[in-house]
Image 1 (tube, rainbow, N blue to C red):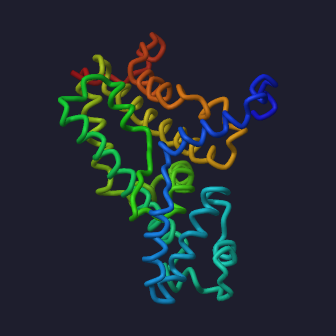
Image 2: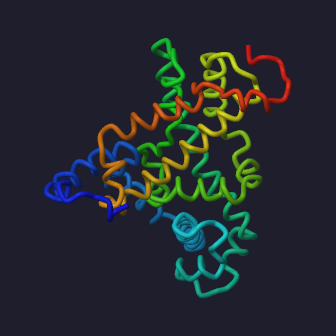
Length: 268
């Protein structure tokens, strides 16, 4: 994508980069105060707990950058500076147990964000439109002293990788952590136009998957701002993402799709 950037944009590269950073902070905010709080808590941990945290942070970064299926136990141990081959099994019992714990960490944070935004909207009498709901569903790792710095930088890409390659593990690990998503789906069912339940279910799942994937690319853009500046570097991008997600729900259903629908009662 970087090769398609026109020379006119290059003339204000520095300004665009600064504007991009300002907008991106709203998606995955980060403040030194939070890092200080996290590091203060880290310093209080016992040696074994520190090792456990290093393994988790190394795994999160590697999984996010390379994909869950492309990272070995040895890769994680080396990245965490652990010479003992049994570090992962000692602290987590297995590689899957480590992945499951990381999924729970990120999933808990994402669900809390969805609930918080939906609570705020409901306090004002909303939501009134599908578009208001899809704006809530854009994944955001909020600013909090309880969120590890690595989780903000790699969490969405990791979560998306697990969603693609280890779907059953994801559902198992996030059981009970999807209240915010379920509330959003309930609001969409109420606000969406009448359509076969099969189609609405598919569209809600597609909206969720699309939002998570887009969130992961926003997260990646923090490191590759020049590559992504024609998308996430533009002020309209996040709002347009919410529009697009709403469009997935609201798009007309083709005759071809309707002919393939399993006969079920209407969504109303």
